[in-house]
Every structure is written in C-alpha cells, then in structure tokens.
Length: 308
Image (cartoon, rainbow, N blue to C red; front, side, top):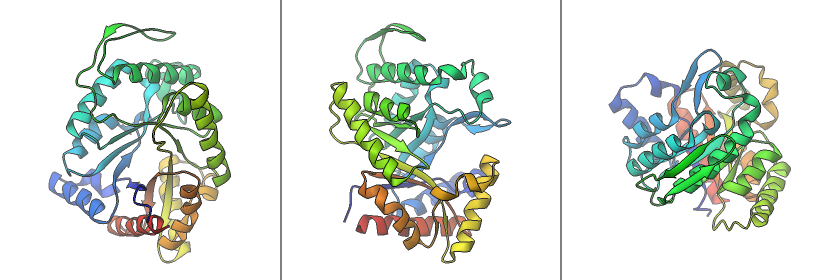
C-alpha cells in the first residue's frame, strides 16, 4: 500500500451554487470517498473576467471540514506583491495548520490577465523567481530585507510563521519551471506531460537543488490533470471533452493525449506510471455523469493507486 500518496479533487460545479450546509456536505463526501482534499486554480480576470481569489476561496473551504487538504494549484504568484502573499499564506495556515500546499505558477494562457494586473507578461518568470525568494525569506518569521529587480523590502517580518511550514510546489511544463522548483520549491507540479518527461524533470529538479546547495527532506512532486470517468470509455471521454472545451475554449484535441478517460481501473492504469516515476500528489478535475459519481469514482481511482 502506498499510504503516502495524496489525491485531491476539484470541487464540483454544483459547489458554486450551493449553500453553506450543502458545501459542507460535499466536502465531507469528498473526504469520506477516500480523497485527501480539494484543489483549485487561481485567476484574476481570465478570458473575459472569470476567476477566483484562491486564498479567499481556500480560507472559506478550510472551515467546512477539519481534515481536508487545501491544494492551491496553481496560484499566480507574479501577479501579486510577495509580502502580501506571505501575509495571506500566514493567515490561511493559521486557519488550517498542516493542511495547506501552495502551488505557484506564472500563468500566461491569457496575457491580458497579466497586463491588467500591471505586470509585463515578459517578466513573469523573473518576477516569480524573485517572489519565491522573498516568500521563502518571510515564511520563517525572521526579519527580512531584500533589494531586487522588482521588489525593495526593508526590515519586514510576517508573524505567525506557518507551523508546520507550508510546502511550495512549482507548476509548469518548461525546463525553466522545473529549475525554478529545484531552486525554490519542495516539488514540481506537472500537467500534460509524458511519463518519460515527468521522470526526466524529477531528476533535473533534484540536480538543480543539489547545485544550489539545497536539501529537500521529502520532495512533493505532483501531477494535475482533468479526467473523464464512466464505465463506458466513450461516455467518459465525452464528459471530459465537454468540460475542457467549455473551460479552455479550444478544441479537446489539444488535451486528448494526456487526458485519461474510462473506468476507475483504466484511469488508475494511466496514472500509475507517474506515481512510479515520483509523483506523491495526484490532483484531478473529474468529469462524470454527476457530481456524486465524479467524487465516488475518483475515490476508487485513489484506492487503486494506493494499492499499487
């Protein structure tokens, strides 16, 4: 049994229309299904204005269940000032100690979203690097001073520091993202990559950390994917195709290769090589006949993966 494997799930669409008691019941159903918690992605004004403030969302979800993990996957770090992010993370960790994982990314699917936040899209990578350095410097609770390309910070302190420390994973498929994870992160968060690429990136991340003189006690590499779930693979593919095309507004062909669809056994078979290659966190956005089916079937995928 792989008891250390964590599996998180995106909240169902009905979550957004539900009252507090219904939301609490949905989160309880997710945990009862054998899933570790919830994940969601961050957007400020995505393709016409959609999005959520991920810190605010997770603060609310944190009070719906005492055990649910909160996986921010991913938070668009370059769009914010890192001191404010450090304060938000401190507060969220205080609300849910030991249950928060911060995934960060640079965005870019919608350049206008970056621009309306006053950020030059061409600087996203460098801003993310510098923001991670600042965030790391502030999360220990000590006085921190920093003078860089984008931020000048003199004698700042954020209390209380997260206890236990919040793991930070870095999302993105490029080598730059993998190297960023090696320099600043506790893991790499992948999406839409082959198992070969995943294994290569895990090795590169470790090599970069070694070169930087960093020792990471336990890497928390992850994989984040949409999945279609149904006993009938054709129906399963239809569910996830509809969901992804509605959200991303591009043809499903762009995602098909890396989007498993079928029974829980078929989806687990697709994901298992990633676990063997070093993934200790699997984040899934399931599409199924109903929200209840999505939760139940994703729980079955988690159980199958933990069995090995």
